[in-house]
Image 1 (cartoon, rainbow, N blue to C red):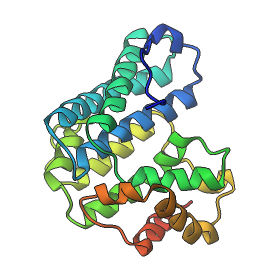
Image 2: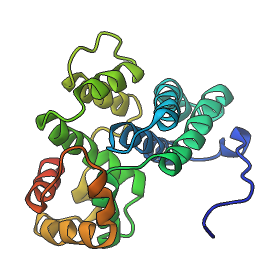
Image 3: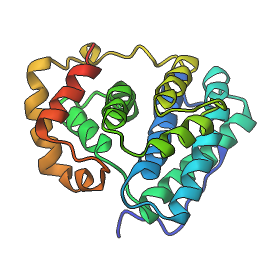
Image 4: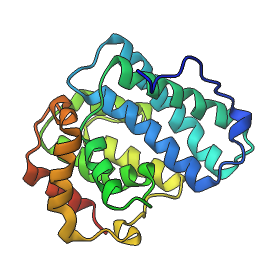
Amino acid sequence: MELLPEIAVVDPELMTTVPPKYTAFQGFDALFHSIEGYLSKFTNKMSDMYAITAVKNIAEGLPKAVENGDNLKAREKVAFANTLSGLVMEVGALTSQHSLEHAMSAFHQELPHGSGLIMLSRAYFGKMIERGAAEERFIELAKALGKDDAEKAEDFLTALEQLQQKCGVAELKMSNYGIKEDEFEAMAENARETMGELFQCDRSELSSEDTVDIYQKAYK
């Protein structure tokens, strides 16, 4: 409980000097809190309400905030969504994508958390879609990201990549941070040892082999 603040001041005007790439990294961290919260086994009416609202606001505001840090309307949307995304993990639950990324950052501490999540995201959620997990929820998330004509779960991956392209982060590489393929098994083990509880929140259970496969597919 010591980690929970008694009061938090969320003021977009204090965020205008955050550089574009860190605006993007933090924005996507907030986005994935809500996406994971919308896809976990432990959703509820409140977590769904917060999560889908956050996703919509990030999709609308983040590209503009990255392009122009002084755009207060865009900053406000992202700050609002970020706050909601924090609430999502308190009233709901995240999934194992966060476990996988924290292992990456544990091995390579210069890796920004949001950057690692972006690197993993398409491979991670692609694995869930391959399993047929939460298809209708993926469609709803694709629509929240702006793809109004979404009809299948794979449309979520298209919408996610488009948002990453708009924010200039679609081509992030693990190799740029010194991550090597021969570390994947150790990172998969670390993810389970340190944050194994999040694997229990997944709608489709991931094995250690699945985790390594996600790392491999995300690697470039």
